[in-house]
Amino acid sequence: MSDDMTISKYLDAGELAAFFRALADAVENGGHDEFACVDDFRKIKIGVKNEFGQISLKAKFKAAKPCAPEAVGADGEPARPKYKDLKKRMRGSFKILVKMVHDGVEPPREAVDAFLADAALMVGYPGYGDEYYESFTQVCAEFKAAYESGDLERMHAAVDGLVHEKSRCHAKYD
Image (cartoon, rainbow, N blue to C red):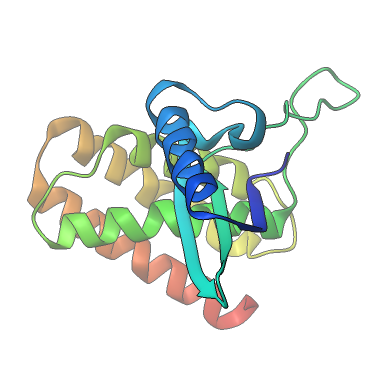
């Protein structure tokens, strides 16, 4: 499975209740069968309609991480994701960092680590803003130091620096 899964089917009221019980169990105890990887979700969207006595269920699950094992390159190292996929992944962690820091709240370690790891990967892709990579990497290091110190003011300044670097690069390359 990739990082998302869709379920679309018609069922009766009893089957709908069983679906929700199985989903709750998968979130609480780990995914399996129909709900593989649901326990590590990023987003769940569920729509239920009563259509002429038949219940229509549409559910879409986006996992935080791909469920399938990572692809391995010829050198035995994990294969790099496509640049577009990496940027999409970074967008999510960056959004939460900016919002939380601007709200005066320390972001979760998982989001910080994911963003910094993806940022380090991103600067290894030639042709996507190479001339900005060094300054971006420096601001990432400043953000990491600010986060490690727990200083929200420093984090705020560093996040603003990251926004600035992103804007400079994206103005030319997006």
